[in-house]
Each structure stands twice: as C-alpha cells, then as structure tokens.
Length: 469
Image 1: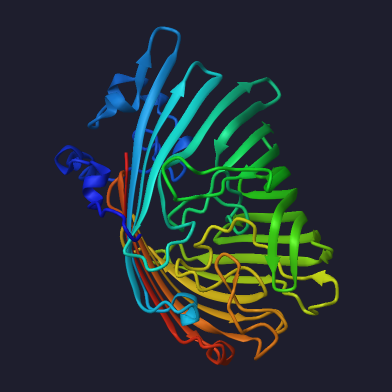
Image 2: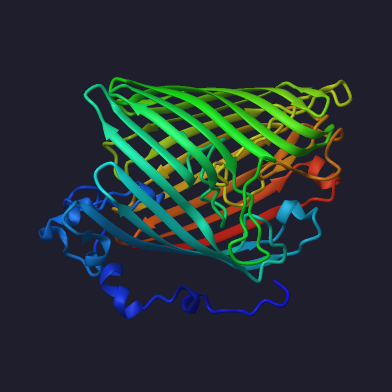
C-alpha cells in the first residue's frame, strides 16, 4: 500500500530455517499412522494431548506442542502457520475494472495458543498478520495486518446419551463443501464470526445452533477488526449419519445486513434461508448434492432466490494413479424481471473462494456451471486435477458475477446467456507432515456478452507454499 514500509516476508515471519529444517525434511504421515495428531486446516480442531506420552515426542519443538501445567490436568499447546502464495492475474474482473496485469505476493502468518484448563474447558486464541505485497487493488479479503483472528472459550461434556459442546467468542465454522458457509481459506484473509455456538452429538445425530455477527475486516491499523449488529447470521442445523459413509443434513438460517446493494434493490436485507444436502459414497462412487432456497426482503422488495450444487465422481481404484472422473453442476438464480418488486439474485453468503477456482472469475449468482474433471495421484501425497468449466447465465436480465458476488459492469440486461469456458489445472503436494505446496493455472475464454462489456480472455497462475507447526 502507498506509504507502507516493505518488510521481507521471511523477516516478517521471523522463522529460522535452520531450526525448522528437521520439521521440513520429516516424511509426511497419514493421520494416526504413528499415533501423532495430524495438522489440520483449522488449527483449533487439533488435539495434541497424545504428546502427554513422552514416546510420541519425537520431533523438534514437541515440548512446545504439549506443555503440562501443574498436576490438575491443565496443558498448553502452541503452533504457527505461514502461507505464501504468488499470484499472477492478467485480467481481474475480465479486464473491466481498469486493472492491467497484476503480479503480487499474498502472505498469511498466524500463531496460536490452545490452553486446556481440564477435560471440559479450553481457551483458544490465534493472532494473524496477513499482507498483500505489490497488489494493485487491495480488498478486504487481501490484507489484515496484525489482528485477532480467533479467541473463544469452549466447554465440552460427554454424557451417556451424547456429547454437549458450546463455544463463545471469535471463531470460524464451515459446513459441507463450503459452497455457502465457509472459513474462506482460498482468499488471503479467512472469515471469522463473533458467535455463540452450541451442539449436541450422538452416534448418528448432530444438532447445532449458532448466533453470530460476521467479523468485518479493516486494515487502517492493528487490531481494528470488528463485528456489529449491522450484519448478523444465525442458524439451526441438523445432521443425520446414514450407515458409515452417507450423511443427510438441513438447516434454517437468517442473514441480516443493514446496507445491502443489488442491481435492482438497496436497503436493509433480511434473508431467510433453507438448505438441504445429501452426500456420501458407495463402492467407487461419491456424491454431494445440495440445494438452497432464499426468501425475505431487501428494502421494500421481496426475495425469491435459489441455488443447487452437485458433485459426483467415480474412482478407478484398481488402475494406476487411481483416477477419479468427476462432474460438477451448479445453478443459481438471477433477477429475471427487474422492477417487478422482487429480487431474484442469489446471495452466496460466505463462499470459500476455491469451490470454482482460485482465479475468482466465477461467482455463485445468476449461474449455470458444468465442470467435468479428472483427478490422478501419480505419487504418494501428490494430487493433480484437470478440468473444463462451461458457464451460462441463468437469466440475461441479470449480470455476470465474479467472486464473491460482484456484478460485472454493463452485462445486466444485454447479450447472451453464454458466459464463457475455462480450463483449470491444479496440483497439490504434501512434502512432509508440516509442509505442503500447490500450483493452479486457469485460462478463461470469455463469451461475446463479456467482450461487448469490455472484457477479454483471462489467465491466472497461483503458486503456494504452506508451512504449519
């Protein structure tokens, strides 16, 4: 940003390669194959109590992953995550936003402390410093210098009939494939909520209640992120395990925002949401089907919106590289009749940013999306996906949308339904249990409607390395 003092990423993180090299060179382990906990994307979901056994303290700095505190069972675990991603995008918003080729570095550095008072109570806190180096346009999901990301108090108690859990404070949550409610791991700044969470779990059932205010991110100075009554998200959810590999779930939610802006409506948004999902696997087939209805109002206009998403696949387990052939189909409503007192544009809520691609060219509004793919695993820890995406608008009366739900100027009410097609190649590799990398390339061939709006073909390349301790 203008006037900002540049700090070298390695210096900012303050990590010593000499100290970390034993961790970087250790082989990757599957979860539980040696009794050690697995590192997870959501660090608060980890449980390092297994290191109470000295036999499992086999890696450098294990004395900081489990620190006993007295004789009453209290213990503390420390950790950190550093993610560096170099991105090159030659046409943000298909070139309609006046931004030429943009090459930049996204850095996310987080440290956390997990304090367990006893078997029931814990306090988890996480600080982050998230920066965008040399990015032409820095948005709210790009940069968040030194701030509080998570800080919640949790209570857990197991009864004969089930387990009760509750958390209060700043936390994150994500559901299913994170189409609509996610922790937003794709962009640089993840999504947090100031929330009260409660759930009851049995062998086959889970009931969840959430009252939350999504955190609104600022980057004016340190520790300036806030939440307020201006935005609210509440949910009641039920999950049912069917057999060992299938799940049914449904939830009712309310999304409220004081100052909402759509192409055909502005004002207070009060959106009622019903979502249902069925997912599972059988033999070599896997599937994930989800549908959402939205009602309510924006300003003085009624909401009538909907969306549906599906992913199905077949894995050839007996063939070399275990290829999986997949098909993804998504649809979301647009506003078919502007000026009729109804808003048909679907609100994708809190999308994850990588459900389509990391390029950000595709938003989950006014959309028909068909994506066949092939995924192979040539080496242990390596996964490579190639895919083709075909896109149409659900209605030409509404705009083409990019992530998260930004309307492309001069596309509403004009042109054809055909939006364009993209090709995607992505490779993910786990070098060790602590170090992973990814490369993603996307080429988007725009349709005539986007060309008429001033857009052009677009290319994206992202190269990422992530270290977690």
